[in-house]
Every structure is written in C-alpha cells, then in structure tokens.
Length: 133
Image (cartoon, rainbow, N blue to C red; front, side):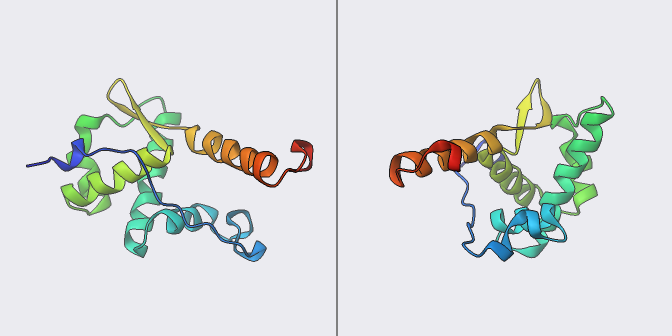
C-alpha cells in the first residue's frame, strides 16, 4: 500500500488562460485565482491559499512550519490527512513550496520554471527576440 505523503511529486497541472482579462495579476484576489488554476475544487483552492499563507507568516516570523506539525495543520485547515498530503504534494510539484530540513518554505522554483518555459516558447518556437517578451 502506498502512503500518500510519500507519493511522487513530479508534475502538477496548471490551467492557462488565453484571455487577458483572466490573468492572475488582473484579479481582485490573485492568490485565490492562482490556486483555482492548480486545484479543481473551490474548497481545496481556499485551503491551498490558507496553507501557503500559514507557511509565509511562519517563515517571516522565523518559526517555519515543521513537517511533524501536520496534525496541527490538519486542524487549522479542517482537512483530512490524505486530502492534506494530496494538496501539499500538488504545491510541492508546482514548485510553490519546498521542504528543507523538515520545514516548509515558500519556493521560487514555480516562477523560475514558468519564466524558463515562456522564454523557450517565445524564442525557440515562435522565433521572437527575447527582449520583446
């Protein structure tokens, strides 16, 4: 039997919108809009946003959330263990968070990967100069 918390975190599906009006940066709540592009269910998007906010607050305070605090996190998010680890693994797979020294940290890998993909598509596939991106 597989344990959900040990499941592979290799890929996360992200919905990409073509309409400029649906851009995350144009949203009244960009954090929530980003979560809705990662999670299909509204409740999971809200919990994902709350979990990221918890990580950010504790990281800024110098008291990062430790992986062994999972029971407290489950209570705070009002979520079951399997649902929590599925959500967490999507956030890890997307590169929004990382685990270092058994602590959750916000990660810049998400941004770096998207920039890299955009740059490659723009220059290699569309044959456009990089500075026009």
